[in-house]
Image 1 (cartoon, one colour):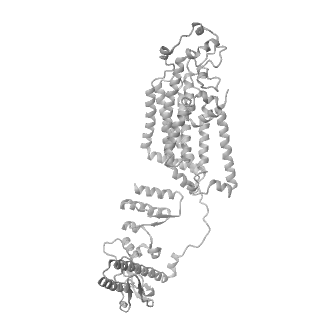
Image 2 (cartoon, helix red, strand yellow; image 1 turned 45 degrees about the horizontal axis):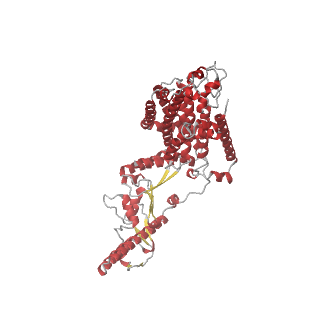
Image 3 (cartoon, one colour; image 1 turned 90 degrees about the vertical axis):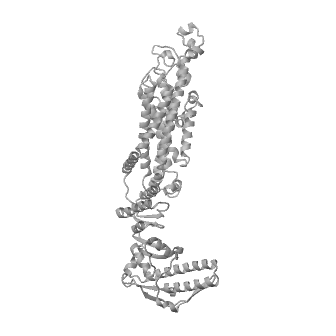
Length: 612
């Protein structure tokens, strides 16, 4: 609601622990109930935290007006009409012969007075000797010496005397304006003159209020004038003592956990959506069929019997593709199935992780602008998103194992679904820091979908092309979130099959080259010379590569959040600080960051290209 948004905005500003809080019309656009809640919250801040709240407010209801301790009432041009305690305002204007109508809101009455729309109602008998001349377009007045009169309310104000300067007193103003209004109406009856007279009358009333306030201020005793003096110039306050980085990290994790619990229903719905989508597409794929035997009926070609029983590698190599056509087609189908499931999972994970980050993007900048370490908050978000999306994807992986009836150890499936999430969420933490908030969802969706299709090793860039080019191998591993996941899961499945399927070779096989394997023909697991050895525990060749890819992307995200959008964090440009007034610590931290990032890049590229 509007009231909640107002309070959230106030809460964001309070994160900096200010001593003074300036608010511009905090109740505008709210209904009376919401406005009362907002102002009551501010009053609580004053009482409990000792915060000084300065607010510009229009047309407050009586209950809200009574919450204020001090009032500054300004007239046209920002000139002072009244400044003092709220409870003394009514008595002050009563001493100037303004009368509060029965049932009228004091705040509305004060605004009418400061605008000059209402006139005093009680006058001094000295008015008979004064005159004021008003013409069509100009006005003049005779001034008298300073007059003094005793207020009829002086008993309640301890005998305070009000001085009227330059002879502009309430009695004079009312009498002449009434007379001139009657003369102008009877002589001309012009609506233009009436409007001009009304504007001029309001102006004279405001001038009278300004001069009476100046007179009132001059008569204040020194003990009360002290309250209006500006503060004595002093040194800037010392830096606020802030918690350590570890303490801030713990506090941020606690806050995120609280927010998760408050939004637990929506989080359960999001998790159910991921689990349902992955389970649905896995069910549509059906059980795993590693050989697709129906291809033998339509595409099997004649193979000489001698070639099938021959022990010579060169003879069998000539008919290798036709001999294992069924398993080859089965691998193609498995690649398509797991790419589709991996793409659906990575898309949903990316969207949800990005959403959790962009929702708190403003908090990033507020935290940094208030002097707190934004890295503590960003690290907390890293931990939170990894745990949340990790639980979601592990539940989905459990259903994939159950529905597919896989022949391999389920541990490898759980591991690679988690690593799929790890790389996807790493991109989801980096891209929102580079893209405007309004476009981030579209960008992350297109990026994940396009790169997940083109660089996975099936469509666009095949695994054979990837292994033929080192740059393509590195590029696809970083940008294709499904690339390492897809090859590792499929190789793990077909590595478990016996040698008669064409993927593995038995230990008894002698003299057969590594090229006599469907893995070599399809360009999968090329860097691992042991890939053709039968093993049902899984293929772990690229596990460290996937972990390092995610770490490198997250390291880049830490660099981006500390480098870009510094103006939104109430900081100078990073490059400006580095060039002009950088401290030795800044240079050291920058050098360490680049060394870590370059080191991660080198190790990651090596792990992707390594061979045995």
